[in-house]
Length: 285
Image (cartoon, rainbow, N blue to C red; front, side, top):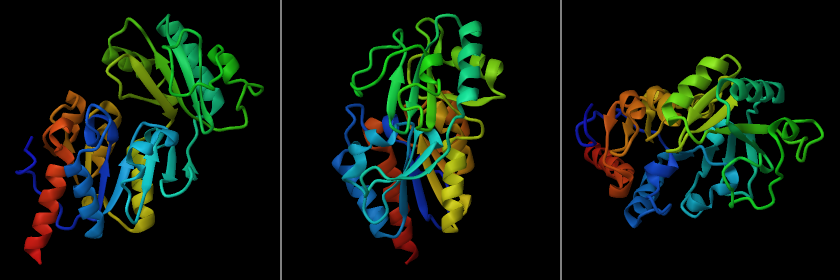
């Protein structure tokens, strides 16, 4: 594992893909002036910047003001691609089929009694009474997951982006391993929270697979991508990119997947690497 100043950079960097929480954002969910300047300088140099996050598209105001000529964001761990320059326009959706979601609910209720669920739709989130109190979406419907996933449920016409599964007693990584063993053949499981909160997507949906598709549309190879992340939901993306950096505060799985390591999100770890990329480009010229 090499540091931000030691890790070899791509011969040509055409795209930067960065996670938000714990990576680009500081712990107070803001962007430092240094990071804002680095993002703007990268785009001015012709490098595309993709925000790649587990957040839903409606929670992207934290970076919406800092997009330049591009503004592409991959949200909900790859389930959605949106253009942040528009009013929430979804460019593509990769849903979790309701029958697969119901299978996961039934399986986890048996394998991990006490699991509570929330259902993330393109239109918002609904959750069970036992799910941890949720304040960011006050208009959510509250009912058992089986009802929320039923055809007659509120928002039943909207695609399901993610199923969220929470357990109040299990260790986060143990819960993830259990879920993957029990139902990994029907859905993709990951996590990004410090608590035992799993994020369940359609089989084959991840930050990496959606990023790969977006890059292919632009003729960008993995070797021309630099990625940043800190949690298990970043692992596939960090493995796919030609060069990748785990944050100084990263989960061990993210560290193992990355080609290098930068400083923490509180220490502007993404900006540190972007500045190095731009300095190397200037030297080449």
